[in-house]
Length: 222
Image (cartoon, rainbow, N blue to C red; front, side, top):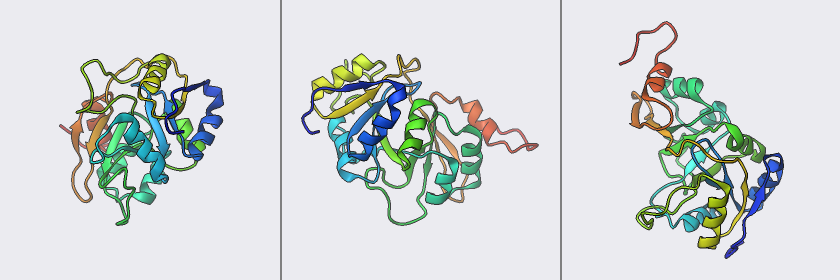
């Protein structure tokens, strides 16, 4: 709800309630090992816009596109051989792949190529319960609007304080305790018909990316 300043706290057992809130066009905060993420339905432009508005995020800075399986990536994106190796070896997890869409039509909030994740844990379970892709972004104010004291939320209390301060309408937060890593996802760019390359190292180590790109019995990469 626009202007809402209270955030309901949901136990993980209430993930179906979180999925129902998403289906109703609401924004929900969900824990990962890294930090809490703001999530909405990708097919709902108003809900996706609410994520941008909550974060004061520039519209030119696309959101993360979340799917529940490598098969979903096959259906939507033009996957290179490297992309298949990476999704097969490191999904679900904290790896994001930059992928070109199969069709010309894309999700506006995500852009093209899309930054695609297939999460595990509570967020992965929520994507599966939603039954459709979600868009997501870190629970914090985006640069350049961020101050030096604005950090991504690592606890439920920080999400609630963020929701209260912004008044932007986070409907609920799923309580996953303290997010211990406080780091970004690893991003690998996977252009169609070309070799993948590491764009940003994060929680997935570069050596793990190299290992996933080495086919069974093949030569060592790097």
